[in-house]
Picture: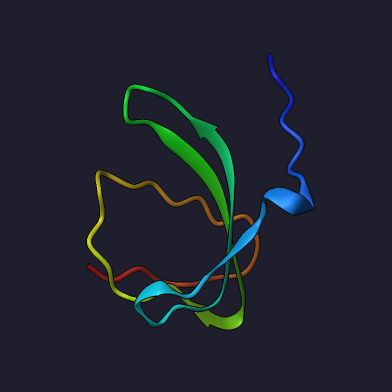
Length: 69
């Protein structure tokens, strides 16, 4: 088992594609095209419609939302 600690200095805001109130913290990047990250949205925040680079899985830990595309 490996325990990951998310460091505030690794977090960055997302503003591309008209995104608002969104922050991403990378957790794992592998050479096999598998990436894991924490995406945090503030109340009313959004990630703008953008081309996905692969399959995506979303796990909502708190609150609610929806995905379009």
